[in-house]
Image (cartoon, rainbow over all chains, first blue to last red; front, side, top):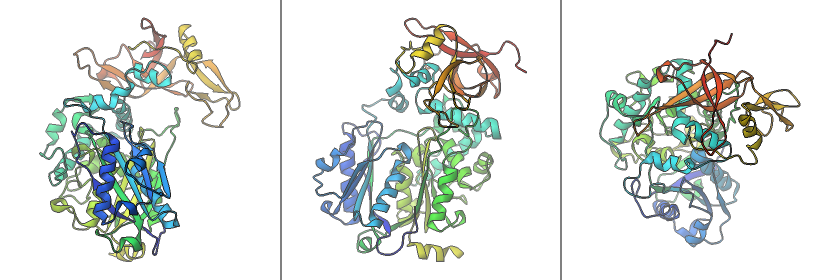
Length: 403
Length: 130
């Protein structure tokens, strides 16, 4: 998806982020309405300008099409629920971009919200594993009986397979956690901003071997929305336009057999190159990289699959001094990501990319922010979305890439 | 282990475990062996899938060790590749977490939680498979 040019080329013109984290007593629908209103205000638009709405509900599963009615949105020309889990944010922006480019709609709000944390003291792991615990029937119940309940152990199996194949180590995963925490120090929205060391990572309690606590994302309540509109409409709005230059998805459909590349290669290997090609840019042109980081390993695998390093070398690459972190050569997960800042599924990397491309990152702002690469990942590495975002329209991005 | 109940989709499988058989699917069109939960063939798309007993031998593809919050022994669980090819998500028994290795030869056993169906688990094979 890409090749957009001219007046109807899609642009992210608004970003709305609600209060995030341990915020209790609000539903996903409430967070979502709040996020959309904030995105509309951020863009300098009125709610009545919104003529398209895409919703993506999180674990609480209480965000539906009813949001349009709740918010009093009338005469929408596009309305749908989207669900591809962590790849949904990127997918929604892709669908909204195509709708805007085709003239189907002019201002499409894309919103994610979740409220899995219901009371003080509720553990994040409990919030995400709780839904399957009472399962006694069906095939998934066999996974639960085995002990493979929720995302932690299943993603641990992916990391272990990579370790077996390529020699990846826990310390290499830890390098990613340490680097992202350093970035989080500069993000006022980050839940955890105190620096950590590799020793802290290694000393954190084991969750699902090889994952320690500091390999795992946190869990947040809240909502994030972006507004996608056309380049000509965005030209007069309040914020610097963030151009949607390219996008792609990949859903590998791993077989349950010896042919499976589970843990070794993800959909990023297809979606990444396809999105870059659609945008007319190369990996070397990218200034800022925002990768879905439900676990440290997800980042490592995506780095390999996008081509930042060779297959199997994600561990040594991440652990090489001078590569990651605010002072590193690769500006990766500049807001601290899901590991340290906030967990809004694919809206975490997307929101940080919008902030960076606009140049609004404050003390964590990257000096070069013309082009951002954004990933979304859902299921157990089952679903992948990629976006290439730019501060300039397509033509100028390409012209400017020669340096 | 939580007792499991058979349902229409798993009834045949659990009838197998009750007999001490590990049933998998086999595509009538191309002969491919498939995981029990498959409803179409991963190779040819065929939907004529028969139940067939696997040998019960397999090798460890991946595993995780889950600490027990209450201080009991950890759970070791992961993926087994059956000799016939399909992957299963399983509990490992009679294993030492530190001794787990990729490719470790394992074989099926059945546990019978009170009030539930017999469930396949995997233990280190008693003799090395070629």
